[in-house]
Length: 272
Length: 308
Image (cartoon, rainbow over all chains, first blue to last red; front, side, top):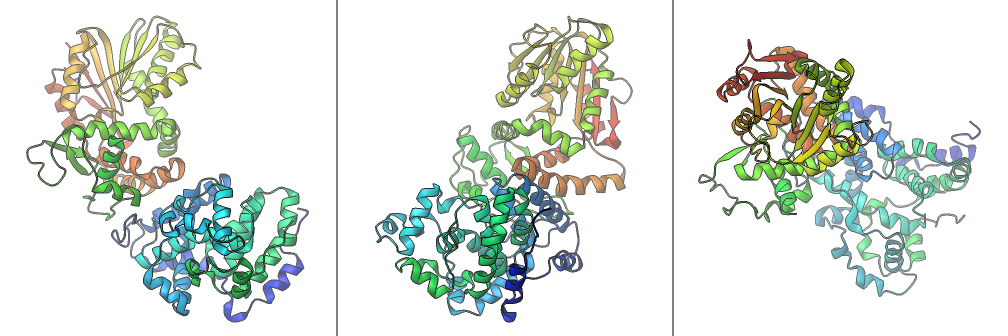
């Protein structure tokens, strides 16, 4: 292969990750932990806990995880497979995100109030009336340009805890805000760059899998651009910024985008 | 549209009866429809006051009898395009061996007129015509592919366009209900086959009676269906495979866990081999020996009866 997977500038960025905020965790322990703590491989551990919950046994979880990983890699348009991959592998890491949210006052408010992001709660028409350059206006512009709506996210099915299901849901729903904040485009390499960013922030295995295997789908130039420009930016900003799961986005709509970026510690992504 | 909501709502209310597992499946979109359901076929409300309505099973759930047909129709409309792929995935290709053996057991002679009920995507019909051509060099065999679901029939028709039987009188397609073959005259068919379809019918006894009516004297009824595995070790492996692997594969390949959950549950609700053979005898058929042959340890079984 003509490219190096981790060029030296990225290794330096990885080394400079703030030690207390190193959120990358080994993935291998995840499945071992599930195997050791599961009561039975063939029985679902809980009953139905929330609307949309599908309790599955550890065996089925493993099959779904592997199957959805390959399907999502082969066909990234299968949003339900990407979602299933995240949910079946998310387990321990959602707990860590939830614990980190509990450490932050805004995060605690989010967990208590559980705001939901749909087109009704976002009041998109009001956002469209905001001045240009504000976070809310740019967010709606992003939605309109990409012709997506906040309602198209797949609901959570395979997380065995009501609170963690909300955390997963919130993580999914705020994805569009990350795009607006960072300025990354909704192309395949933009999404992969955002997955690197999220990997540094959350450590979810799904982000790791997307980050490491996603680039296999890119052309050589796109990969080169990804690892030369986007990934160093993602590593640096992901670790230096505030944990974005703690941000109550609904309250930041009227601020200008540059101010939001400054307060959260994120530099806009380099434009190519 | 109402039938789709009906299906979603029924599947959302499913609660598991099998002792070894404790899963209840519902997707959030379906629970929204849960309290909005207005059944279009009956005029009772859908609370527990269905004592006046006869109920039947739909997978592990109980539903009013006249809803089952619409629900099954919706299931097969959902799976039609991926039906053949999923068959291969779920059985590891073994379903092809079962169907080959089924047609060899039928051993049709030249000029046989076959009614292939629940024939949908045409697996049996194609094998039947191929057998007649290859074994007897015969082009006069005829098959009518009969199915309640237009989507499945359409997939079958598309598959047949790629065969030499396209646009010949050897194959024809008919949409209808197996419980009421009103357009097919009495004593008109040499053979009647129904493969993996009879367990989805609401009234199996009516299907058998209609089969008896349309067969000529000397005609043969043959049914290929999932059945009961007696061997306890294999039965356990089969249960794990059915309830853990198959819905996961349905989710991965077809993005439709619920239809495949219905499928594995409906298999458990169908009568076992001996009981079904008894039902065939009660419909008037003459049954040779036990009346059935187990395939793959009883995962599937071929039941056969003659009209004498």
